[in-house]
Length: 71
Length: 71
DNA sequence: TTGTGACTTTTAGTCCGTC
DNA sequence: AGACGGACTAAAAGTCACA
Image (cartoon, rainbow over all chains, first blue to last red):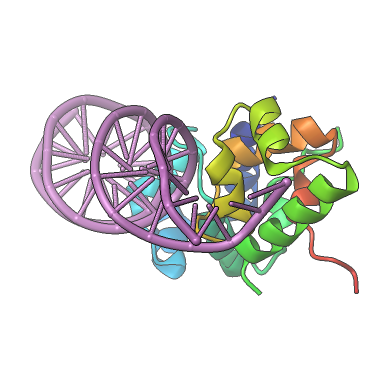
């Protein structure tokens, strides 16, 4: 499984776990709403800068967004 | 500390620990020689695709390249 | 609320060097 | 062996309208 796919899944999972819409997350992270959508759809492979900013919004370590689910 | 700085430090540390030159690492990861140098100097923030490929060369989890030193 | 196509701007990443 | 730069190309970052 590609790392960008892991990111996409974790991104969606963290976002929904915190009850945020794509739009709310985008606003708080200072990025575009459609870009969040693109990341969750694996349209792009994100840069580490974007990963870092999103992790800040979630209040987690950036590493957590790239960690494969144990299952 | 910025995530791209963490990557830069870990990249250099892993590379030297395995006794690889920048050029050898670049060749094995299928990226450019000067780009490895650039990453270690924080000239760029890498994409997750590049991080993944470099981690494969080192034989480690991509997450390990982004983990801050415990010290 | 989210997905998508078309688009422009910025940056990643390459290739050529010199020091 | 590696730092560093200029110039270039591919891809990401970011915006918008519309379904």
